[in-house]
Image (tube, rainbow, N blue to C red):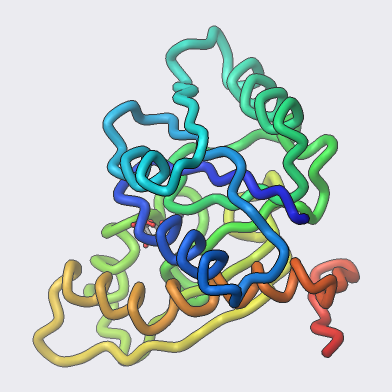
Length: 208
Ligand code: GAR
């Protein structure tokens, strides 16, 4: 049984896609054991409650330093014996201490085709605003293993999505979620649960 911990900050639609993927059996032999939010009003916490998943709120301001925040998060996940950590709209940057015992065990979904529109400052709607401002015809989403360098860890899956004339950031965000994020995140977790992902340096090989 793969024990999953999910870190969230907002609406939690990706969390929901993960919960649904496990419930339907698409993601085999796995369970979300713990959802941690750094925001106390995150709707993702309600989604977790409704699925009978344990929740915790751990905010950066409760700690004197970001290092102490990272350690508190890592300790809580360790106490729950978590095997895989999923960032799902988690809007805080994790420092190197967080990853000490979690190499290639932390995944993130990003709402663009990394390395485009990624790195510090590119999160949530800002990503889609930037894509539209640049006049891109195509965008998408990426799932990657997380390293201390923001949005730069090994890529697992990517899915392209069309930018349509007349899109605003909200409309584009929704299309990227529906056509890419909610599909490739459960798929990447499924591949991890099946033991099919192999990381060699910056490259992820899918052994199926
Ligand atoms: C998603 O679009 C996710 O890709 C993005 O925030 C949204 C969270 O939505 N994450 C980032 O921008 C991280 N850099 P959700 O809370 O409904 O899953």
